[in-house]
Image (cartoon, rainbow, N blue to C red; front, side, top):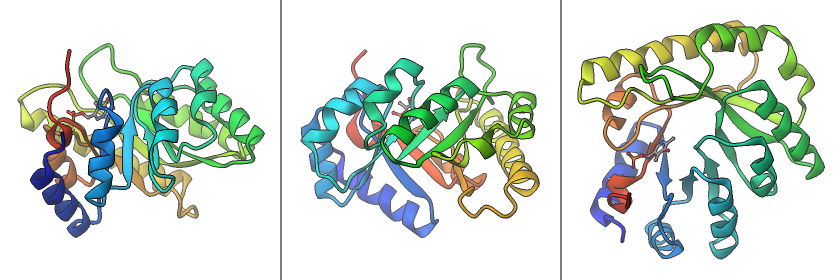
Length: 223
Ligand SMILES: *Cc1c(COP(=O)(O)O)cnc(C)c1O
């Protein structure tokens, strides 16, 4: 259910490089998550709000749950009581919704702004101009119950690793620019979430601080 050796190896590589490992457990049963927990894993990522809300109460309290997939505004309420970090903020309206729900629970929720770096049309996220417009708008200053901790991106799904590297490098450049221009005095803005099973090594070489790895740890998903 869990590839123990692979998980241990990933945990080692990540801790050596100061990168956080998010074990992506979507579609996998709580038993698999429990097994990874038993191997010391404490950070897990899911991409569906309801699935996450169902699994969370069945598992230990000291797990940090990350929401990594596209999130609809009407689903935010399922995860606001406990979610640790939302990687997939892809609109102003979503960010405002998270802020509103977080305030109801007296929480400040960590968020990453998702940037569209892949060639595919269908991928979610801000493009660079939209991201800069959001930051210039001053909206963030008024949202006291979200804390923007960095950026997230997904590379094009391709075997062309030069292309993947170029996309990650571009995202890291943008991350550093945004950090310098908008978050110079904000130590919370430090995360760059990029890299999955097929490209985490390249992502780490290009400055990732957080990798989201599923199938290497838990095996291929159905469907
Ligand atoms: C599923 C998923 C991952 C993990 O993908 P693997 O290829 O299984 O490692 C990472 N990030 C996001 C946003 C995902 O939806």
